Amino acid sequence: MLSLPDNLTAESFLRQHWQKAALFMPHALPRLRPAVTRNELAWLATLDDVESRIVFVDRSSKRNRYRSETGPFAPELLANLPRRDWTLLVHDVEKHLPALRALFANVSFIPDWRIDDLMVSFAAPGGGVGPHRDNYDVFLCQGFGQRNWHFSDEEVPADPEASKDLSLLAEFTGTVVDAVEGDVLYLPPGAAHWGTASRACMTYSIGMRAPEVADLAYHLNIAKVSAKGLYRDPDLDPSEAVPGYISEAAAKRALRLLSLSDGQRHDVATALGRIATQNKDWLKPDGTSAAETELWLSHLLAGGGLAMHGMAQVAFDDCSLFVNGQNRPLLQGARRLLAEICSNRRLVRSARRDPDLAPVLTFLLAHGAFEIPESR
Image (cartoon, rainbow, N blue to C red; front, side, top):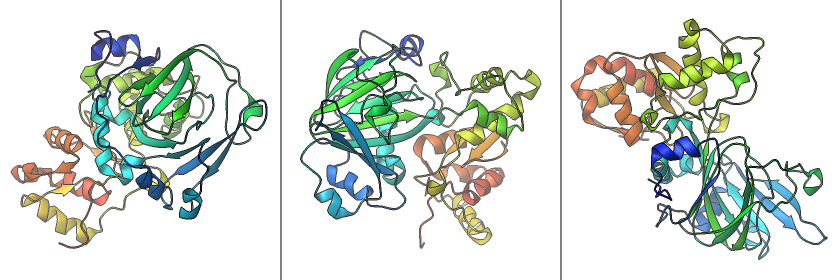
């Protein structure tokens, strides 16, 4: 877990900073491992199913301007980038390189269903994406190199002249820090920030997912809702951070956002779980066919194991199991098994002890929860 500064505990961090105030944490990760190399990141940016972009900084005039290009990129283009003033950003790295998911353990006091992705960026000296704000919580973990950060909880005006491609803010001073390897900057939703590479550097961004109120309403067939914006949990408690588990408190928060009665809590919880485990279209793993499901179910019930698919999203609450945006009722006795799967990202021998869990395993297999070997 992160080494929190000033004698903060997980409880006090959540109470004082989560969704409230930015926090710079020097030496929070003395050694950032696992990591990716610049060449590995560039390779990912050449692939069709990887979301990537390059942001260029134009310093030829009196003010900085920013230009963005989206991937995939030709290897030749990446090999011939200028020596400075650009940043390569690759999203969902942990879904393509599952070993990188281990970095999420550093924020184990946040429920894992709230984690969206690991974005990794390599910045040449002078590289950055400009002043901006995000609508989600993010932990910016500094890898090798050094980055100069400006951040502020104050309102900063937009600057439409800074870029034709990006929604940027006017440059501001705010709080200024120099991040070196192992430093972490936490930013709540809406906090203005911008970083510039003092020297070539790698930054690992653990970004959170927060369902939009409008999406919850859509899943519930509600035509109009009074609230707008995103799901919020400023009252989050570390006891909610059970692997794979969507707490009852989370459903109650969504219920309040939608101004619905307690009698609709189950429907709201179901909508929340489906959205929380929904994949991007190009990152949705294939489920097994009926014949494959029967074959691999026998394998699992006989004590065999399978790793969870790197792109799979699995969660559960007190009533339902959610897999890649789909749901089914939660069988009594399945919670322990699911917590184990979500914690270890694999299924080992536990299933053999309870064949009554076959419907759960069948559902997991059929909806793409597991990485199926090409041959046995």
